[in-house]
Length: 566
Image: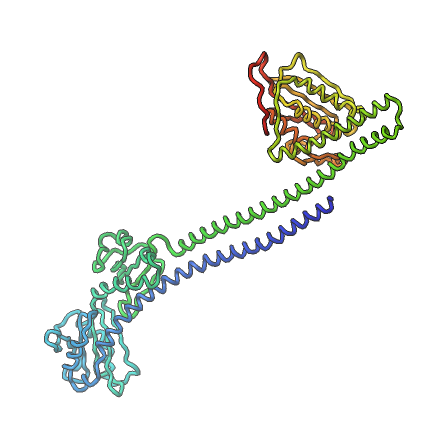
């Protein structure tokens, strides 16, 4: 039996390990994945912000480049054949919003090297008076003028931008003939206010394309000019942070002291301006960290619940296995307990039936043995039946006022033959004075005392003296049974009243028993509103005491109670 139990336990632990080891590996891999996801998520969010800024600056560049190519792309014949009126007609027809001024410079006509401004009111060109703007235009066209004078061909003429003077930003398109020589320049002076009006439109249109609905309102886009002044900021957060000066994009603001999460310069035009992106509530790293913390918390909670479930399942399986072992031991022990009195009854009965005993005293003695073993058998069967009734909740008691001393005396008289057979001596100590009556079920209390006496006999370990005492104390009537047996370890005192439990001391395994006696004792006593206590030392014996509440002294008019189920 024990070998099979050990095999079952090993199988149980192997099964638990087979589940736990893969689970631990899975949890470790899950944690590693969460850490990698945290890092990847932060990088992905950061990359998303960078892509958005690239889209904004790209859109600005495309707008200005497309307008410049559309408006400034003039045929070379306009300059070689001195037909500038066609250029004026072209400028009027195409039109452009982002330019404050359109101009041309011809290197092959009467106005060679002169800047001619387009006047939309009269659809013609005229020479402007000297101004800082004209100076900025001449400085921007100077390299092309030099190439034209030298007559050197250029490989490929592309749009160029001159922003040396931030107040007058110039976009140029050099015009070349069939020989790739520069014959003229068409250009525009950019309108800074148009750029600042264009920013909100580009920003608002680009946000929903890169971020989910609602999240774009948590992002602040800020644009700084070359002096570090804020020229644009979306959302109230930046406005509050920068003050009332930021309420309109056309008004220069104070430098922003905050550090944007991502930042880049504009390309093609307004290259001294920078655009930055900041989360209003949390940075991508903070969002990723918060998400990581939430995921880790959920991961830990689920892992704990899963492990707790496994441990609970293991504990339940272990308890069920232990209970199964205890029940197996119970069946084995009860079988032994039943065989012993039955064997004695059968032997003595056969002696009487066969007439081998003729002496009347001997017949009487055999009859006493048969009666004693029958009582012992009855007690065992009663314990089993009572346990079944207790487990099903159908156990009932009939209480009546009685003297506990009389119940004890009757029980000891019943045990006298068995004790004498086994060589035991009972020392009885009665109470000092008369005992108050107790409300009890005499049969149940007698059964409890019988179980205590039976334990004292079984676990005597060579000691042949049992002390029984009855006394009263502080409103309680107490009956105690003291033996000189093996004793009970301190860590098992609270367990001995559990069903099927047997003390783990080595000597116990040589004693057969059902493991129900003390459990039934506790149930009976608690049904009487009493308690059971035990005092024990290993190797010195044990003292079990049943405490029952005493009835008030004097005559009572209270009626006897009905049977009580417990």
